Structure formats: C-alpha cells, structure tokens
Image (cartoon, rainbow, N blue to C red; front, side):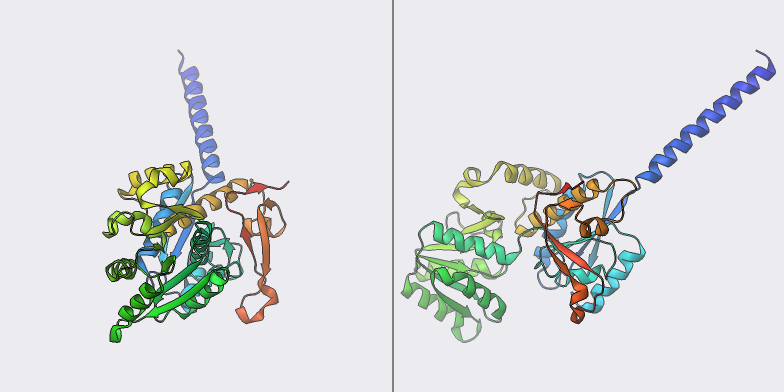
Length: 353
C-alpha cells in the first residue's frame, strides 16, 4: 500500500469517526435528559410527604430521559416562590407536588405543575384526601351502613366541615377529641353508647391506631373505616380485621383478603414498588406521586420535536383528557398573571391532532 493511499484511508476513517460523533451528539442534543421537580412540604406530615416522593421516584425510575430532583418547602408563599424561581431558571420540564398553592411554583411560566390539590391550585391528576374520605363514605353506604360516627382530632376544623358535608346522605354524628381532660375517653364512650353501624376515624399514623384500640377496648363492635395506611395494618401493629382502609383511589381493602380485592394493576404496582424500596406503600400518597409521574411522562411523550412548550399545548387544546381550565389572569388576588391551569383525567392523555 502506498503512503498516499494509506493517508487517504486514514483521512476517510477520521471523517467517518467524526461523522459518527456528530450524529451521536446531534441525537443526544435532540433528546436531552429532562429534569422533573418533586416538591413537598414535610413539616405537616413527613411520612405522607416521603410516601409521595417515593411514588414519584419509583415511576420516574422506569421512564427514559427523566431525572428527578426533590425540593422541600415549608409551604409558605415566599418558600414556594423561591423554589419556583429556581425551577424556571434551571428549566425543569415539570413539577409534581402535593403542596397547597402549587400553581405558584410555576409563577406564570410554561412549566406544568401537577398536584393532588384542588383543581383551582394546579393541574389536578389524582384524588386527594377529600376524595379518599368520600370513597370511604361511599363504601359505608354500599355496605348498608345507615349511621356513621366520625372521630377526628381536635383542631381539624376544616376536616370537620368536609366530613360533615360529605356525610349528608348518612345519619352521622361528628366527634372531635383532645388529649386533655379525658376528651378522647368521653368521645369513645359516646360512640359506644350510640352503637352506630360504623365509625370513620381520621388522623395520622399515631392517632388512628390509638383511636381504633380505644374503640375496641371501650366495647365498640361495629365497622371501623380509616385512611389508606390501614391497608398496611401489619406495619402499624393493628390486628387483621379491626379496621378497613382505602388502598387506592376508590378501591377498598379488607386486611383479611387483600389478594381478593386488589386489582391486578394495584398488585403489580405493589410488587414492583416493594421490590424497589423493600417495603409496601403504606399511604395513598405513594400512588398519587406515581400517578402524577406517569401522567407527566405521557404528556411529554405527546410533545413532538418542534412543538411549542407543554403549557402552550395544554392551552391550545392539543392534548385530550384535559378538563376544567382555570385562568388565573381573571383573579388578581392570586398575584399570578397569564397562567391557565387544567384538571387532567387520570390515565387519559392522548394527542389531539
């Protein structure tokens, strides 16, 4: 082989290598890793906040090209605005959160915010705690309960109003308790004396087991309903059959027959989640976080190369499954201008072309 020919071959090889590198670089630039922010306020209930973040992390770990970063706030307006400014500056593709006033995170920009809060706060993707309570009350009606007592901690006036409103179709009594002056004992005695068909207990992972034990010890023999974490009763030391918890949106779980009442999708989720974290999801928030992450991934998949930002696609009606738009520019009291947010039907994200 002549020196000239060898030189030409080396040049051709170098050109080919350079072309491959350029193509790879172009491919990489066309589909960069997109960052997703998960924003929680752990101060109120750190276990639920952690469960929400875990659900989002689990689902995002299965999505290609999405990277999660966790942000913690105290839920205050200054804290939310500070986080929102950073998300805009660092060009996050979406926000998953269960924090109130979630729409303030995006601060009028094109970053879609998905939340379990009320629709007027941001893109609502899944049921929040109000829907969890509503589903439990529906369960009470479906199982023939004609009277229901509600037991919740003192100081939760907002929940008291909500529960009272949801119970209008049942003959219900609301009991609040405090730890002072035997307040909980008096409430339990009243419930036992009433012998309602069922009792709905509400509170955190410390309060609810204590209320259930107190009811049974006081002699109450009726049905007890409670939050989603009761479905994982073994981790809380609650005996099987003592109470019924809501495992997933609008699905009910009898702790004695989990395998019979959980849907195939739930069972698969629980298996994969448990394999990933080493423990079952105890809170409905784990499902909420996972559902939000799945919906955001579906929305981003709909967005094609050359399309406008996702927020623009939403406003133009280019994505099906969007209901109830809220235009914040019509409400100056929020301090937001030019923001429209949407409620999304879970599991129904399709492109409208």
